[in-house]
Amino acid sequence: MWVYTAQRILYAVPIALGVTVVCFALVYLAPGDPVQMLLPPDASQADVEFLKKLYGFDQPIPIQYFKWLMRAATGDLGVSLQTSRPVFDEVSRALSNTIVISLGAVMLAFSLAFVLGTIAAYYAGQPADRIVTGISVIGVSVPNYWLGIVLIIVFAVELGVLPATGMGSKGSDNFSLASWEQVKYAILPTITLSMVPLGIIMRSTRAAVAEVLAHDFVQTLRAKGLSELAVLRHAVRNALPQVLAVMGLQFGYLVGGSILIETIFTWPGTGFLLSKAILTRDIPVLQGAILILALCFVATNLAVDLLQTAVDPRIKRA
Amino acid sequence: MTDVTLGQNAPLVFDDDAPAIKVRGYWATVGNRLRYDYVSLFFAAVIILIVLAAIFAPLIAPFDPNKTSMAFRLKPIGFRSFLLGTDELGRDMLSRLIYGGRMSLLMGLVPVVIATALGGTLGVIAGFLGGPVNMLIMRTVDIFYAFPSVLLAVAISGTMGGGMSNGLLALTLVFIPPLCRIAETATTQVRNLDFVEAARASGAPTWSIIIHHVLGNVISPVFIYASSLISVSILLAAGLSFLGLGVEPPTPDWGLMLSTLRQAIYVQPYVCALPGLAIFITSLSFNLVSDGLRHAMDVRI
Image 1 (cartoon, helix red, strand yellow):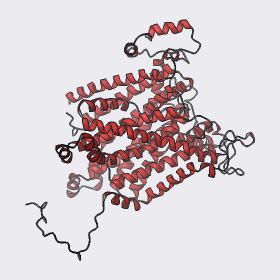
Image 2: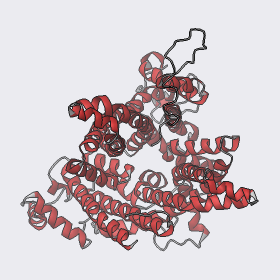
Image 3: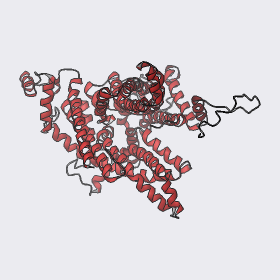
Image 4: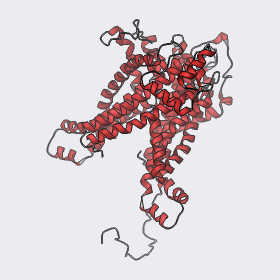
């Protein structure tokens, strides 16, 4: 167990380093001089020279990377061209907003999907199963950015019961889940965001529960006279760790991939920050946000993996 | 002797009167399963319709998709001869939707086809050669797995700037790692089986073993996985256009139409929902057909 944990953490280190290489390379992917990318268009020649020296753009690329990595490790990801605030502050402020709706979405998706998926597995091949399978296909096929627009049309334009966009009058500062006035801004983005994980978690719950139900011990449980509900409880408990792992990974995907939904709802999270940065070609913010989001994703995967090993003693990893 | 050899000693006589047992081949079985899978057949027909509409767009579209009209901006569905209304520049929605299918299908298919070829090849090479080559290829793939696909696509096309070719490139790069991994897994499973060993022992060169013995076993899972990626690719491509990173205006594209019409959501909500509906139907059809193929071909990924 401890050996596996140590190995898994060690394995994440080269991956994380690889991620930093990719993010570093992004600036070089962009057309034009990388120095110009990091400065506002009206920067003076002296500024350009200063930055070149500071960031070591006159040195070979591996040294540039090393210097950049060292700065990134201390939280210095440069300065936003638009707001002139440090990129790290911008991203970390937005990250908490993204986590609020991602966590909400994944919990909503899980609670619905686990129940429906279990029902589908129990009634495999019957109408209930077909309906659930249909819902899960729709969940993964629907363009969720469009679903967001449809929800705005229905609930904000036609019915007028929920706000369409934004995060309330107070903005993202001191956002509180205790106040309904603020929470209602999060409802539509959360529902929209939960569609894809809903489909995927449903599918994996159905597969996991069906697999357990096919085991011999289930027959034994029935043979000794347990009620069907009790049999199902055994099956669900066995399938749970696997489904929880899928849920954890989905959370990671949502945090990194909420850009379209946040753009639609102008929810001030990392996705919205990214889409603003794309629009204004704010390369430092773009690079910093992608780096932090990708590292979060690596960390989430690692955590899910370790938790699953800890929770489920059947998984023995060498 | 066990039952495996049973019947070997039976005289080899062909009895013409015995009822013939028809043995179906693999593809015949697959075809037969598909024939009775009405859901897949229906959605395959939908896909064919969408493809035909895209190919023959100039013949079907009632209006020029780029002809603007200030007098007829944002008209509702069914307004005069505009069956599905008009957009914010007075262009006919139906014509734009028909033409828009071209871009969506292109952006859905091209990255998947290229990524299947490249990722599949890389995966077979990594799987068959093993050792340090495998290490190098698969660990590089792992790094790209550390990005959620939306984020990776946005990262690449966001820094390189918009445009269709950058969008295609970004999507292709996003799909190479998963396809590579599928091909690698399938190849590794086959590599150590006896028939590959036998081929090697009888002196077959590596390329010949790969073509004759490995590829046939790898192609099904790769094909099935790639078919499931088409819908992902359509969704991602429309998403990139929506962010202003894919197709450039005034080209009709469903993602782009969704993005520009978003401003008019309070004026013509139903017209605004149309491009997304088109994306949804297309992606749903590809997903269901891919599921049907997976069942029919009996592939587990």
